[in-house]
Length: 515
Image (tube, rainbow, N blue to C red; front, side):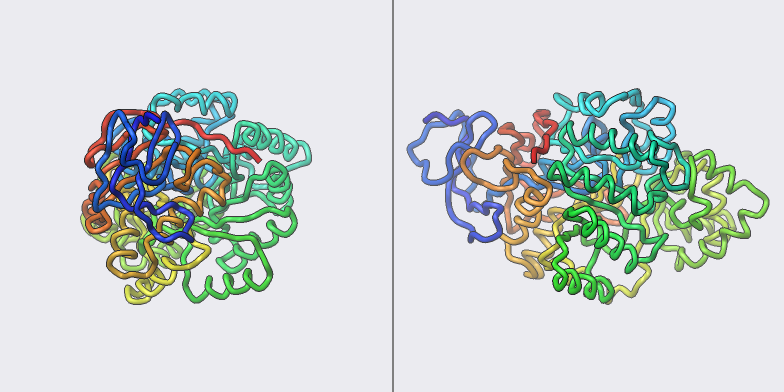
């Protein structure tokens, strides 16, 4: 048998989580794994020397704001250089299709804090129109989810009320269009507009449809509207009423969630979650406003903020939310204050933290993003992160935000941080368990039947890395720092990373879910 590539001399961690690492060669023909075992006498167009290295399945990022960055720009290879070969689309339900250009532009402006200004046409009248922009232009695979924000926006705009029967029927048809196009999941951002306005009836109706296609439900929960415990309980209720597996975005295991996780074990709720294992998140400052001021289109929000009594109503909550002012400015429309802490930026113009934040929202027309450190003691954060890293229901996902001037370091470091810090240094999880949480587990959960494992006949998405040196270099001060220790990454059998450097190849595909 003639192979295109043989990865020789490495230790295979196969992505199942149950098998110990084992020495084997991996043979690749075209876009598939053709053999795993002793291939000493086999012929190949090229042999990759993996002595002292681990050979694993490509990593799968189930929550990442990357699909536009994959098309080009500074951060096109940020995740791939960590070994990420598949990235799910529409995190937090963000999406711009199928919408009229006018509505798509409104949604783009609302989500611009995570995508900058990409200069795209925004004229995608169908799910397939949108998906057609990716083949031949991306270094990793993308995998669609149903973007609930776009689904609701297309049916009823930015209205804050429950949907009528007619509007809900429109949402059903758009959701069906995405599921027919291969979406693996109904994805929502229930603290973001307009998803935040969906009632339980809407969520259950759309979830039942998704379940009929073998898809699952994944959401940024309604934390700010319901509070954390009630938001989890709403998710339990959706799972029960719709008969659908559920997945919670960017969570962590602290005292409050540990009790909820014990409860789902007792009640048999089919629930998973993901984490990026950094003690800070990233979003827009708009999220810190009272919910009444967040509701509506971007233009509506600005109009509310400019009303005479808005400042008085918003400043108390902002003061409570902003604490020590240690948030980091990641993006502003004007380019001001980038990389500064909120405290530094506010001091530079002689304002309190809350006054500065409120004024910035208006001055930047709502287009801004911040890194938000957890407002809890650092020793408590460490305990929480360590508990999260080893939890059996947790998989790794970056929630990376790209192409903004000063992103969160998770976008460049999430996956290799897990290997370096939590496997090698802290020894909180075994190597095979860690690889499973980044490959086999997300593949199982989101229905990627031919990815996430190393076995004959599966897709040749593969990573070769040095377990002794793999690590993140991105920091809070300098987040745009490529990972180290990842030598080779193959996507659909094509090297996109060779000797640690991008090859320029763009073999990524749009993957499709099948029940």
